[in-house]
Length: 342
Image (cartoon, rainbow, N blue to C red; front, side, top):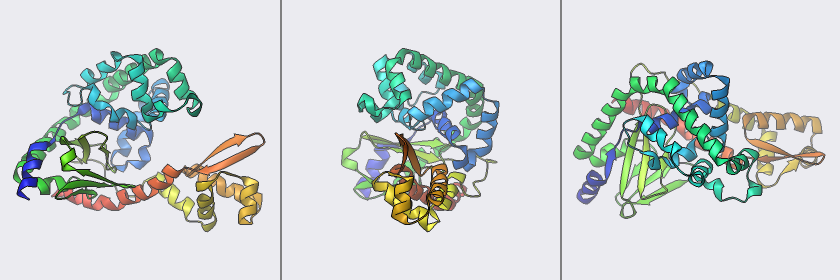
């Protein structure tokens, strides 16, 4: 344990990153009902956001996987810059190819025919969208986020200092307290999400912990490089309570609570089906199957695609996987709340 403590003291530290906090806040605005601790804040922002800015929020949010692709490349934009403007300004300086790679993430490597219309449009006119993206970030920061970061910055910096002090005094205990599903072992660390991520210490250069007032309820990690980034949930005094169940989770659970719909989700996970095929497979009337499909589609668990006169439905595997993740996050909440109060 002595060797592990030495490694943790040398390679683990917390950092203050207002730019990452800005990106995380944009993720919250994409689905406010899922982030109960920031729900009222998100509603206030969305109510005062102009239609043009809201349209850009949704457009870039969708092509960046709810802003996660942009978070994954944040180190290129001054991950630890004290001032958000310095990081935003770098978006105005990168070349067009790098811009499209960062925005589209892993989808950049797909064939042109596998991309959706918005992704193809970004590839066709990268200069236009790079300029629009830069202007959106700058406008969002000056209009909304600058005021919020002024309010939360003292708490974030205090959390950074307390964590770094704790790492020196009790490395294993301090790192283990980051999240209930963040397991600190003797030879590796594990992150328990939809699947288990294991990282050996010998393969790592650093572990950086980034306190965030927006990250709840996620365990958000970046393990694509030897410099791991882990977001640490921070509740500030007088912040919103997380009582209740996130609406998107509740909608999915309600959709799956019916045995017929559960069977349909299972069938469509492996093959797409049209209404009449499902009706024949399950032994129900087409009208009844259509009602079930509407509920599943409204919950976000399935998607449809028209082919000639037929509409085929298919289970969204990632959304189904996320039900388990969201359940874990919901049941972890008391542990996280307790940790903040200690």
